[in-house]
Length: 428
Picture 1 (cartoon, rainbow, N blue to C red):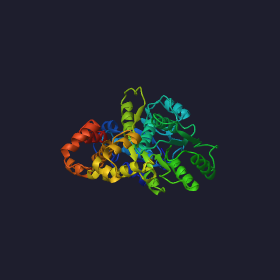
Picture 2 (picture 1 turned 120 degrees about the horizontal axis):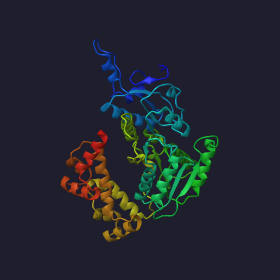
Picture 3 (picture 1 turned 135 degrees about the horizontal axis):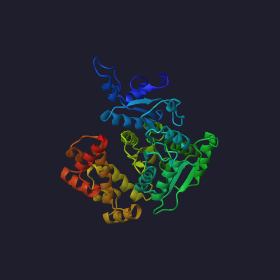
Picture 4 (picture 1 turned 60 degrees about the vertical axis):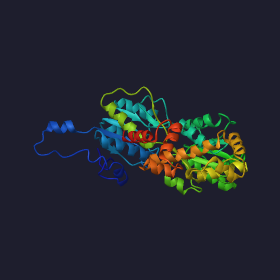
């Protein structure tokens, strides 16, 4: 196998070495006196990773694979740095493999892989019904999460800007539509080709999107098929003079962090759990290499959450009383504010405020306070090792015992159980 083509983990390629640093060497020279049989028995399986390293989604998949290998069976892993959409390397069919994890799988490559009679786990998002074991994002759940993000902010006008004839984009659109159209008019849709000869020139595409945006009712919450498409929306808004997020709120998908932070305004994005995809795929491949039967269903991985940034951090309500009260709650809920405090700040009675919230958000002011607090508690349980006492202080509760009661009522489990399950999922 040509050394100039393949990168055995840890020997070259700084970016890939960092991803697999915890794996260590998967091969060693025999120790003097050690039997040949012992060396052969300990030889790790050879696994090809056909996964792009040019974007964060692919790199996070590789991180999940690395995490699995570091805590389970060692593999002799072969990977080559390449971009999204790059054809599979020539060496894939020229060598003998014990297993393959593959992202650019299409019908032709799927047939080749089957002829190789090697355990394969398919990770592609462009084609379904390839009859290979598959692990990937639940794209409909991603779309549903985006729609709920806008609903929580009071939006009543929704739109989706995606790509035509792309499986993953279609699934995200349908998930978004499912939630957004439940009690509201049909969503507006803009789609154009993502790949191939029919892709429009960039400036012409932005002009077309701008015309579409200008005709939409405002304020409108728009979910883009991915972060790159969201940038098209932001550019079109700037060119047409539309305010983001006051008139057009935008959310993308993939949470390419540097990319999102560099956008103006900073881009909100749904974060898929790509690392878990890698982990689950590696676990499944290990089972297949051990002779187990493949699962009968595709393994869908739920998204993590919406990372809220300036592009969607707004409230789509024109009622001045509601805007005032909501802004107060969002700024003061973590400091222990009450409904009475919010009503006083908005200079209305509590009963009047209750009616306004029911009218615009279909929930009470108290439920909004608890929603903000619950989100904060989950964030702190997920991202820190703070004690419950410290978490209660940072989420607007005087006593951790009462915080735990509220959390269990709203989340269906105690804070301790929530954190324990989170750790268990991460260690799998």
